[in-house]
Length: 123
Image 1 (tube, rainbow, N blue to C red):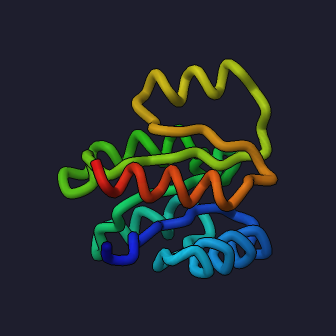
Image 2: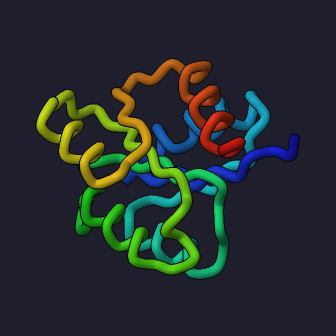
């Protein structure tokens, strides 16, 4: 199995670096983006296997980012996960209603996250 390519979008650099290192240790290739605008720019040139994004970001939050990504023809079928520090059942339900595959809370268990990435890539 080829290494899954993950786009990781969060506005906290330390968090990005920590999760990137963990995912790479578990066999993924990771592109990081500090925020949604940069993530959209990356997606105009690169098609990852999975997108993982935070909810609380500026100027676009995770929901807005998700909706823009899904309007991009080349990205509409890419599995999308939220990884957030926001424990909010309404936000989780709303994300799942939009079509987000999974909703993870920080701090995340990397083994659980990598398992979800691998399952999403195999589909």
